[in-house]
Image (cartoon, rainbow, N blue to C red):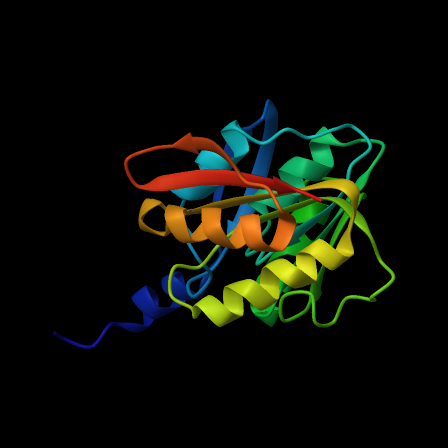
Amino acid sequence: MAPLDRNTIDRLRQDIHFSETLKGHRLVFHTTWGIFSPRAIDEGTRLLLEHLEIREDDRAIDLGCGYGPLGLTIAKSAPSGECLMVDKDFVAVEYANANAARNHIDNASAMLSDGLKHIDRTQKFTLAVTNLPAKTSNEHYYLFFQDIYEHLEPGGRLYVVVISGLRQFIKRAFTEVFGNHKKIKQSKNYTVAMATK
């Protein structure tokens, strides 16, 4: 493959941008290469949003927020609530905060955190959402779910979307950590599940 010319390199460095209507809200997103699904809302996130119940006063956390499609949609749908978006990638956090400002969403903000490790232990949420990565250890998932459980208010809900090959593991892990599991929707590739504290 021939080396890329300067114009092509400069073009690749520019933000990717697109707009989407998510849960009835028209949102503009700027992204960049290296962030998950930079050119469009991915199939799993779209399925999760289609089946996510958001209350107007939810205090939510979006774990692994990327450039913010889940968290910003939740914030728009919860005008009396708020959404904290977290990611362990500082570039994602920068883009999520910029996209919040770009869309005039003042009840959402993003911060750097490895899961919930850097969140104040006293901070509680009524809703937690995540598009779970497929490639991590079972031990990591269990620690993650336990941390979410501890940060949820009684009655708080956790919604996840996973590749459908992980659905039985999620059922088992949710039942062990939360004492309950509900499969919300299963498509060919992805499954949306929830647990309640």
